[in-house]
Length: 302
Image (cartoon, rainbow, N blue to C red; front, side):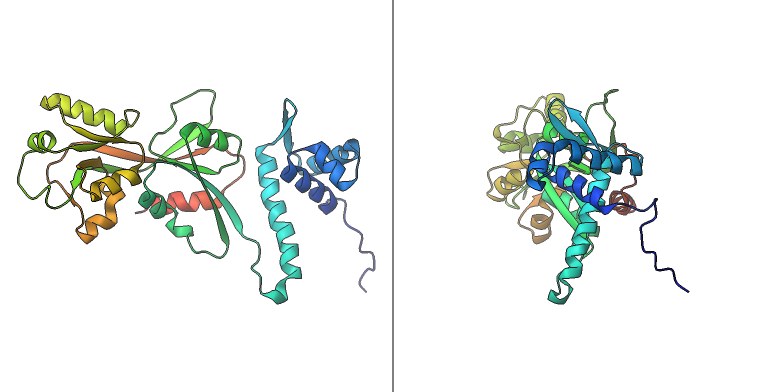
């Protein structure tokens, strides 16, 4: 005979505690959440401490007056989002609404090649079980987001400097040769590289770029002083300027992949001996992130 005792076991999850944590995590403010839920702050704190005791990990840390998620808190929030989304999915089944999905938060340097970003993310694009949250920004903004676990992975061509105080991990994804790229009419002749750099305006990355530093050193070795048509931070803008025939652009071919395939732009057959390194940056985590492992594995096998 089946038992009629349906009470929860002592080792089961208390979903009321989880919902209180979920509310505070999304509000980011204990006082505001307590007021919204018509609870005292102390009562709300007790509920969260009970969840932390059950999970065996602190979920928040205080920095001044602000609450910030720990790594365990970020993992717990992802699961809580999925759990409560599943509840909504149950209610909306007849409306054919989609179920819960894994979320991956990706940051990319604002100036990074869009073609490279698409190629890296391609294994996850269009999957019903994955939601991608894409953010762009400066290196400082992105690495701060990674450190506070607001981002799961950062794509960049400027890896963070080694620092004993940080726990960043840089994964080299690819090393793309850097070419002189321009319209077919600009590159129709058989000029040497020194002549190409002397006789054409040049579109270059800004001084902070590793490619620019390498290009300046290359020109110095040739005793060439190119005419700089534009210093450009954004690779997408470099692509557009090359298409407009403003000059020859110094960039990796992946940036102008579609234009090279169509014949709108061509590469000079003279090599500069430069390369752009594309990196993915993560942080050390106690908990597995299968989507990141999948992306890194897929890109590494190409």
